[in-house]
Amino acid sequence: MTHESGQLFESQTATTSSVPTPLAERMRPRTFEEFVGQQTILGLGRPLRQAIDRDALQSIILWGPPGTGKTTVARLIAKTTKAHFISFSAVLSGIKDIKAVMAEAQQARRSLGRRTTLFIDEIHRFNKAQQDAFLPRVETGDIVLIGATTENPSFEVNAALLSRSKVFVLKPLQKFEITTILERAIQDPERGLGESKLKVADGSLDAIADHANGDARVALNLLELAAAIADGEGTTPSPDLSSNKTMKPVVIDQQLLSRALQKRIFLYDKSGEEHFNLMSALHKSMRNSDSDAAVYWLARMIEAGEDPLYIARRLIRFASEDIGNADPRALALAVAAKDAVHFIGMPEGNTALAQAAIYLSTAPKSNAVYKAYERAAKDAHSFEAEPVPLHLRNAPTQLMKELDYGRNYDYAHNDETGTTGMVCLPPKLAGRTYYEPTNRGLEKAIGQRIAEIRKIRRRKNPASE
Image 1 (tube, rainbow, N blue to C red):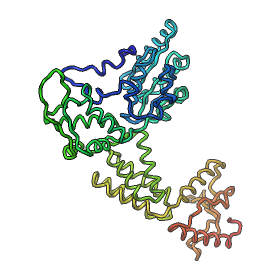
Image 2: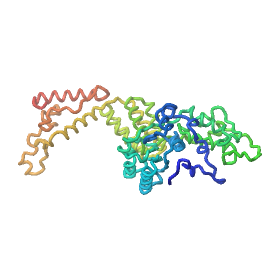
Image 3: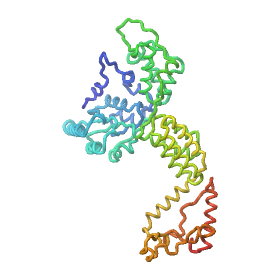
Image 4: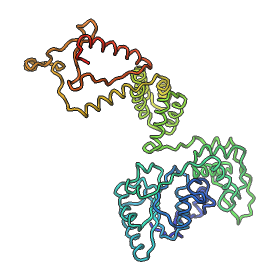
């Protein structure tokens, strides 16, 4: 479980004759000079790089999507630090392992005066109790924690642990950075594909980089797969410096890539931050009446495998929250889209969701219904729960009638205007206005009708307002 800094990760890179090391692992940077990307935090003179170079690192959280260099940074720290370096996987380790490491770190600090640097991969997979176990040793300085996570640490890392750590955000690699990594792998005769005589047609590396979505590991895996297909042997051509065998040229072109790259890989976790980021983008695009952006974000979610009924539920909510009575048909259409998806399933249901998203985007917007409910809910919580006025209560029994239930109730249908001067709010809230329609869509007509109703009520009962 534990590793000295010189031995760290060796078990992960060991190879056998029958199981070759993947290209992505072989090409992992060995120095910061080989590291591509993340210059805003790892460039010369940057705080994180300075702390690593001076071996003065404090607890940090490395947050970023897969394939952006989090584990590589940890390995480089392991090579440079004089501290005892221990690597942990949150997937494989339990609370017993954590306590053992904490005890070891405490002993090393007291007996040897040497601190322990602890790398925890996928720290978001540790539960609260497991994360809490690190706190005492972090606070006393026995360990320096390096956590790596693909999830937003604000949600996945304990507040106490987060407050004692500096968060560094790793961004998806840019396209030119991915192509740089791919070119290096193609040319490297020792660790890469340099001995395979690999030839790449114009535009092919760009296609791989586009497909990888900023993930270097995905890009290298795709290059390795494409090379294996081109080689025609089902395995990646690997360098064999001891052999005099003449290898045939291996060519990667767009036609070959079209077979290897069957479907773009999306960064998406249906329970993680990207799930909420994409839904937020969809919601805000519709709110801004941008139908093109809305249908794009919708497609991103659907193609990444999001639950279509979850999307439908969010569209229904949007129809009430952001459109409301400006276009009451929006709610009906959103519900119809949900029914359509439930009835015909996917992928056929994708167009029903797209139809709804486009309609909701172009419909007139109003949050008056949403705001009306918020105001009413605030009063419901702020004021004493007053009893329902007697004139609004039903009186199904003789006793209720004797107690004046329903007395002085004005039946609106008996009035030619269809309304009366009867007060329907509790006395302390009489005259309150919750719903304030906009001048957009149908709400303009609704607002005019409300004004007429209020005028009638004031005429019939001046005290009603």
